[in-house]
Length: 121
Length: 110
Image (cartoon, rainbow over all chains, first blue to last red; front, side, top):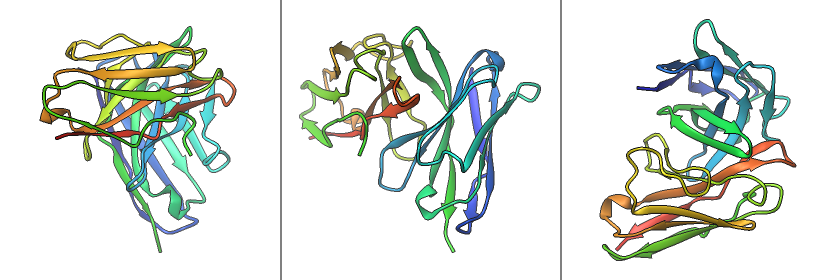
């Protein structure tokens, strides 16, 4: 069964950095795009970033562009999100999700349980 | 302000039917497939509907999806108390080159 396990969340001061990881198993990791999606306290789901299966294409929400970097390591079956210049409004549970895309289709068929990032002094 | 617009809440009695709307534009729903997700607090979101109206294995046929133009609808029949959750529509926005979600709809089964 497909499993996605996030790690790396925690408490960080404003302006600080954090790197999230997502360990994937039970599917051909390099074949699928992957997403990071977050949910701030009391808010809805927000798409954060996407990376293609090859890692050659990356996309970012305007709210994180220039501060966050998505990457993947196919040898380790891992997805990453490097978060720099963190702000209080980045406080959220961060989910990684496996993406099925192509020919107008774009959906997330498997999700991790999430990791909490708290940005506070 | 979400790119896709959903009602904040809907409610209905057990056994009844409810629909949740999702409105977008030509750059997202109008030219791409829509998916729907169920989210209970503290858990992983679950895919309910993909490509407008298809159900993944294990999702009961009480859940259905449709799309017309730049709007989509999720339907749930035979409501159960276990259906109480937040529901989100999602798709890709070709102009933004970004994934987009609706703001979410909280379903209450009275």
